[in-house]
Length: 264
Image (cartoon, rainbow, N blue to C red; front, side, top):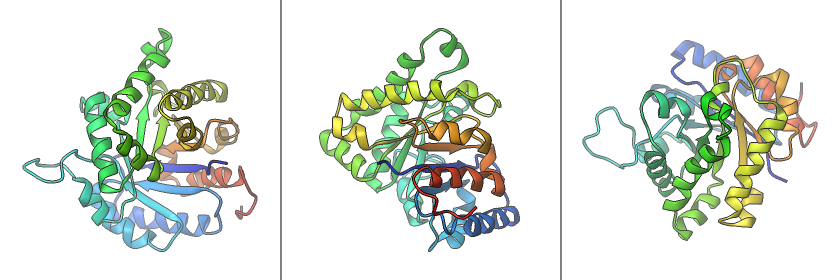
């Protein structure tokens, strides 16, 4: 059985004081939740603080993006080894906001994916369609193109390395990111199943093991229904990850999917 994963994406939010309060509350709330995995992806300036607070806990941390180059004259960029130096084990790639607001492409996401796995970071590749694409019935076409751009650049060795690092796919319908709209559990399951089938074209065993999480206005009130879907292995949580009570509740739901060991 695949182990559930909940990833909090803080986006461009936080300050030293509020970060400490949030993380300390999460540490206490999730300390007995041993049956799922939990990650917070925080703004780069707060990675050192996050590492200081979360090391030796059951909560991992990661970056929100990474550059494809290890070093060089790239003002404002963050290299893979900078993230690993700060103890990151995960990194988000291809988030819809990076694609839309910063004009990142499928090819740049693929290059960052390759750089991440070479550095030992677990990549969380975000895929998903806009409302116009969704309404036009192009969901599978768009998701396939985003996935295939990455898969096409991975050698067999690179694919095996990505599997060793437990690569993650996150389906985030752009029309549901930060809008309050959410795909129904059945809609999410349909796309997650498609993603798994797409991976199976490369490796059937890998397809059964890869975790595919859902991102798009995930909240405690809809998490149970989403996580009960057979191909939904957790959530990529945006705004709700900034609220300790709400994020903890989502994490506890992910944990209880396989066991009731987590204290409520």
